[in-house]
Length: 442
Image (cartoon, rainbow, N blue to C red):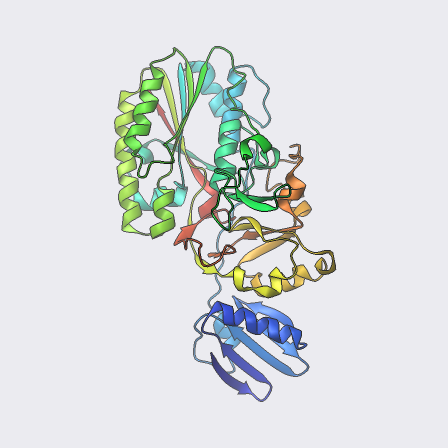
């Protein structure tokens, strides 16, 4: 810890670790200090005439301009809210409308016109995990197959994260209706945070025996379409690495089994590489170039009268970690551990702390997150349209408050065993929310 006085009543502390930073804040609050404001991720506390500025980030030269210098770090990052009139759900509505089935969201006129005129035998939704518009623009040349066939930009559903967005893509409903609202959630029957895809305890990685697919069931959006076969084609998630070429070959083979098909085809890149290496990395660039080459070859082998729609579940943004698991000031106010996702995090707060929790949270993390009462976040239309009927479990799953990432930080609330990411998603930045609409017609 480094400490300097800039006046008789004003001290600046730079802590060597986030644990020491959060422990010291808790000690000061217990001693009667209160949080006055945050400046970036630094916290200003006061008690009477005493002022103390705390930071776990390396500070510039400390003098009486220290607050102004820290404020110079702050930057505005473009945000984008979900648009449930221009998302993957609206593409699916157009497909369902073409097959004369009920729709839950407005269809897209361009899609309506094309499907009616061309009457494709096969429609393929190819979802590349994490290939947001920022990744596409950054890593692929203008003459690449994917860029040549880029026709529009959509928004991801929210949260902009895989479990929520891929489930919405497969069944055509917003997260508020599916209940698939993040990477993991708390279920009161077993009093555990469960990873939705595989049923393991989020904090221990041990199996729970919990089957999310039974508790939050969904059916594919094509299940009630007549005269067309539907298929979901994904990697074997127990095999690492599983080649993209094998996924694409499965798609091509499946197309031979019937005259008319709708396919949902998924692959986990570039998301896996983005988490490990970051948005600007050469590793991610090479992955994107490889994906582009394989898709171009795949497209050339598709049968005639096929519409190939390529998109993503979300984009990515580079991040630094906030070690929330060390912050007893917040954790002591909770009924149970935080849940949902690192940039769309849910808090269930003890009754006696309901009024003070927002003040303390915003004082600590207001630079990096927007905090809403969960009912307000629902009313604002983040998780779906106001006409969507919420899944009965949403009240439990979303707790009392939800904090949404708006800058380049994410919460580690799992602990020291958690993977540390170079980039991630689930927040509201434009980089996370804008996804491509790429169309190839055969």
